[in-house]
Image (cartoon, rainbow, N blue to C red; front, side, top):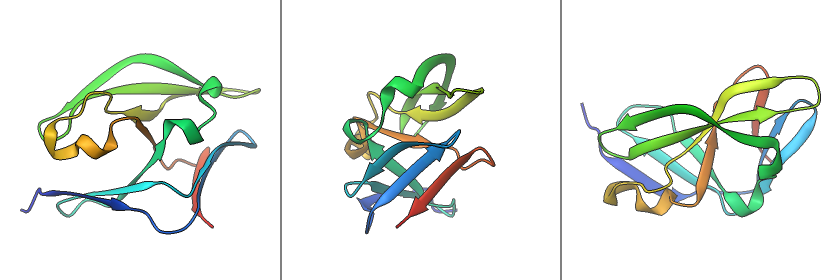
Length: 114
């Protein structure tokens, strides 16, 4: 299985919504593909309303990308646990996603390309 990481600029405008609120909108998203896994869209932190996110205790490790910090999304009505993640000091293979954050596509979190 091919586990090469490829990062490229994601075409168009991307929006992430949760709890009826727009958390982020960007024309500078990055698309990361790894092997045969589905692509992941990473938003620049500057284009995300980070006030809605609180760092959780969850940390995961990927041998190719490094350690990922996870974030809860706090909306008016609920807390979506570990619904986003960020490689704050990624390994060299994923260096381009430093300063970016990705969101799990859940029933309660919508990612959309406009």
